[in-house]
Length: 156
Image (cartoon, rainbow, N blue to C red; front, top):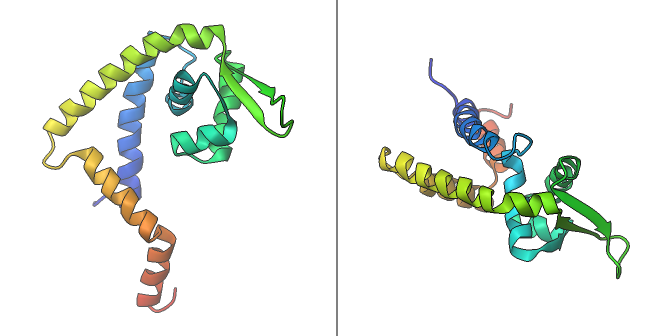
């Protein structure tokens, strides 16, 4: 049976994320791959708002809010109200988060080398394929494409 695009993507994510998550176990068993975009922003900026993290990391604000909540529970970040705008929350790394940063950079370097190794084994670089897919979907969403396909099939 041929796997659908969605099934292929889920399986690929399972294979990649599972391995990355296992690589973090030696560093900090509570660390999750989903924390990485937030950690990268905070390691660069030292403090940031939820909305600024979302923009810098290229992920949705609700996703950042959920991730920051989990990272707070894990003791990696702390969140305080902005002194100038009480509606905004300022996120910073805790001492534990700052201690973890150099170890994470080593994990990320190893992950980058592993990605290069994977791409050497492929006919087309995975990163390039994913970037092309993202660009194409930003120009014409999958919703639009599904709607057009339904019309073509007689308006399902």
